[in-house]
Length: 323
Image 1 (cartoon, one colour):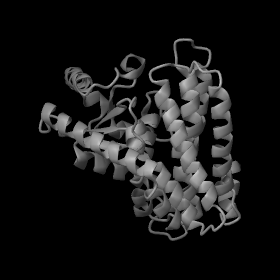
Image 2 (cartoon, one colour):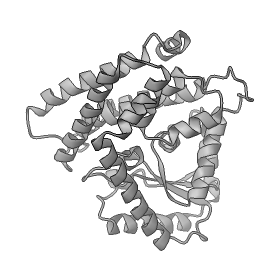
Image 3 (cartoon, one colour):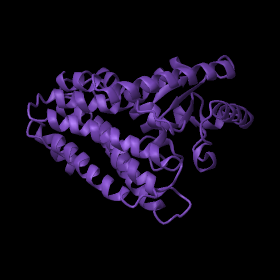
């Protein structure tokens, strides 16, 4: 695992992953002290965003999702309000920014409803699709780890329900959902471009770096080595997106890409620093910012493209990604 070892000895990766883990541990302690685990034994709380990806920075937000084992119709309104009030107080106590869009996505989601809606027309309507994809692609448990683990594994089981331990099984349903999430993110970006009250410039930057890494850093190992069992995917997704990408490169046994991977890591770190310097601004003031990010994003995306279309990848997978 040459590229994985290279990544794990890179200073920027070590520092950010360590800070992310320290922050998550602190958040877990606060949640455990302020929320009664016996009263809320049926829910799990996880964080996404930079904390979930392992690249926490000085201006990172706390992106939280709450999943309940109950059907939505069985969750009492007063229970939702009490829990959400506690979460808002904890977020303030920890010193994070207020939840984005006036708490639009702060909601108690039903895990059974999430699985029932998978692939249906209502999957997107109630934000269940986004909650599920963030659970799978960039989440870390914050409260009730056991329930989180069960929900995580049950979600994976849904994608592998037709595998029946077949060595020839290909997780095309999962890959398709990940790609669908990428296209959804791109469409959502277009939707907010003309809204002066939405930080579309910052979302554009995130889309071209962190979001792209999360999506295609996960796709690469899924197509570069057979992932015929759910255990393969569970072990993979527990890693950060950068680690998944490194493993995907190692699976392909590439000898000509190490220098490009080192540059890729450096570009991603520069992106994280640029985003930190933006702070809470919706767009940068420096006119040279666009030129700098344009150069980086071209190199960043071309490296991913080179990996995803490499001759060592099974051509059937490459065809599937395109068609």
